[in-house]
Length: 360
Image 1 (cartoon, rainbow, N blue to C red):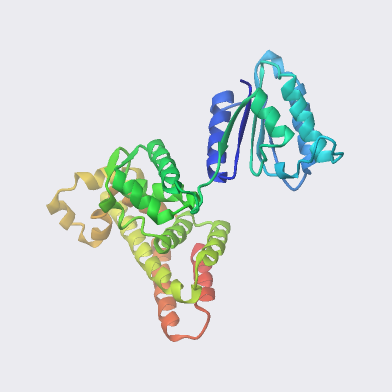
Image 2 (spheres, rainbow, N blue to C red; image 1 turned 180 degrees about the horizontal axis):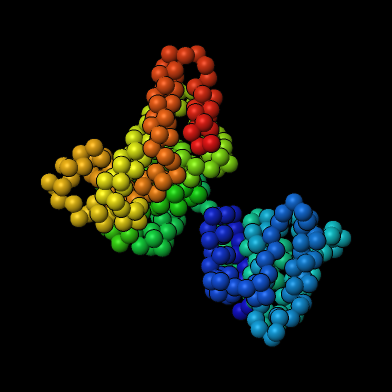
């Protein structure tokens, strides 16, 4: 079928599945003539966006090839009215529905992904009757089988990363994230970072990696330092403070984790120089070290005694900073920690200022 609908309220899963469908239809590297993408933005309203999409479906592919048209992650389906509605948006959606009923040309594939659609509405019914529809809803704590649903998503994500989790490990991750499925990718990325590909993971392996919101906050802040991007750091700080129950008390632990983070970056930078290596080769260098050879790098002990792939990511981040910058960061964080204990100034505002000073 050349009409593919991907709907529901599980935004993360919908986006992933839609991207897969597009790559399957148009290939991994489509040119501008074989793929038309229509996504909502501030420069065009939804009615005109749907009009452009309809025109694209009526336009033959360039030079007789094939074409994929993607209405990407559309979130206004809930505004669709009844058949008799004169609302412009409803009329555009019903126009698309009529095109589905009349069948699209064989050389055009239409992919539509979005949220909030109702199965009783005309657009969905036409899409379902004339195409292939997938529906992905996020599990809820009130659902009887929510753990099974979350476990399936965790298994799928682990498989894509070549990670094998035993049943207890899957249960452990499920309990840590609950129904917050948006965390699945970040938790699996942490596991990949610490354990590497093609590994078998047991629950005991995860107790220092996936341990709930507190560690998730540390990981998010450290990732922002990794990128050393001011906009990314600002967004991370905004999301972090929104997820904290009491920022003024919780931030002290976050500051403490930052000290450890930059000490590891300093060790990574030093290890790169001592071994005359590159970040990409660090895992192999560490794995080849004998116990006696590791003793000669005692100053980098925390780095080389951790997981080699974690050391690789620390080395990549270390390249974003000079040696003096890392030392200055450790000094600034230490002073901020002391002030948090003794000063009456807002601890969270102090932490925000600290982060910005380091990444700028």
